[in-house]
Amino acid sequence: MLFLRVAFLPVTMYAQQISPGINQYPSSVITRVYEIASKVNLSDDKQNALAAFYQQEDSVLAALIVNGATASQIADTKNALQASLKSILSTDDWNNYYKTKTSSRATIEAQVTANFIQQKYNCDTAVTSILNNLYYQRQLSINNSFLQSSDPTYQAQSLYTIIAGSDSLIDKYTYAASSTSYINNKIAKLNAVKPLSPEAQKKIQIGFFNLCLKSRDKSFADNFNNIVRRVITDTAYYAVLYQDKIKSQATNKTVHVLKDLVGKGKITKEGKKRLSPVILEKQQRLATINASFPMVSKTKDSLIQITNTYYDSIINQSLVRNGVSVGRSQFSIALKYQKELSLSSDQVDSLVAMAASFKRMKDDYIKAHPTGKFDSKAFECTSMSRILTDDQYNQLLALKNWGQAKNDADAEWNEMQQRGIATNYNQDSVVTQLIIYHMGKLGAYYRYANDGVKQQANVKAMQARMPAPLRALYAARKYNNPVNTDPSKGQLQW
Image 1 (cartoon, rainbow, N blue to C red):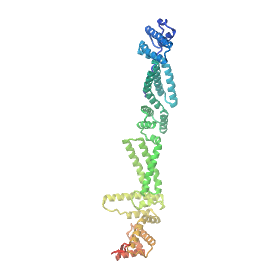
Image 2: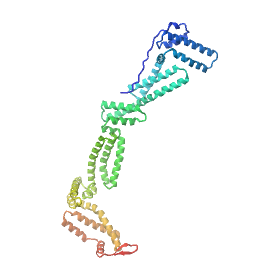
Image 3: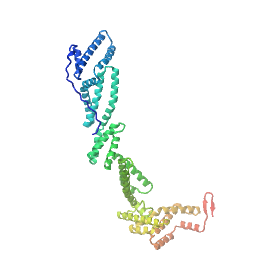
Image 4: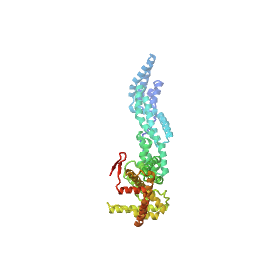
């Protein structure tokens, strides 16, 4: 994996002899000089200078103690003497000494901390090594700061600088390391759908880690979604990764579409049951595409178009079988009420085929005669007589003509009231008679639309059985009986 490289600085141990010139100093001084000389290669002059300084420092501090100086006074004196001590060796000499002295402790602290994180998050060895080096540098700097000065103010400022400079980087890597289990689980899910290529898996792992390393503002899920969409285009993966979200969106959309179709009277409850699985499948496919391609792209547009074309053809065919999309033709009414008419599967198939022919005929006619009126009664009559039984056809025409018969009957009753000839009749009885009459007349008109002679004969036969109230109304119209436009005032209009 590609990660930030943090240098691990090696430590060199010096096995150096003590200068013979310092043998004259007390053992405590010799020991302190050896402490430095054993870790840094020092010349005899530097060793002698250190010995002289330590002897003088011991003498000054001892005098302060004997004379009853306070701890604060002693500490201030020590800090003041540090400047002299620093001047004896070069900056590089002191840095090498501090590093050598604290390296072992920093190494142990770093290893323990990095191993703890590795066990906690199960991160790989590369990340563990980086964290180990980061913690080593941090602990080394902290330990060195305490060796460089005993001044509490200096130590506090130094510690703050070290922590501010290193902890933000450590936090980023620790956060990224904590994502290991998450990305491993996601990779396993992807491979369960379809094995990823080694290149794709590596891109996802590296990209995800670097996104987590870049910022903690984004969640693991956000970073995963970001990188996986850059690497994977196969929608099969997204159908599994986002299956809960896709299912929820598709279900809600399907409910909305079906509710709209039912609300507009385009499908019955039975039609809804048949159409629901197809619409749901379409919406799931569209939701999967949107999950796979959140941004607008040519690929996304193309997939959406292909999906709509495929499923819309199936949906439209289903709507036709349910009596939709072919107008108020007898074919659409028969298909819409196929359960009530007890239609067989073969009859439904025949009606669908004839509905398609009907639509082509109508479209061709309108194209050739833009202002004309397409008359399909004869075609519908011939087709329906061949497909349906007599009882089914009569029942179909009853379903078709009921609305018009009811409207005609209500309008005639209202006119009878206005003309003052309704007082001798019972409304419910008269309206029922009128509906039956108009149903029979309309039925004869459409039932024999392909045979003018039979049509005329049957219509006349129905007219001969015209209800008496309707004959009275026709007579009132013929002789221009008055119409009462405002019954409450009894005004008549001739």
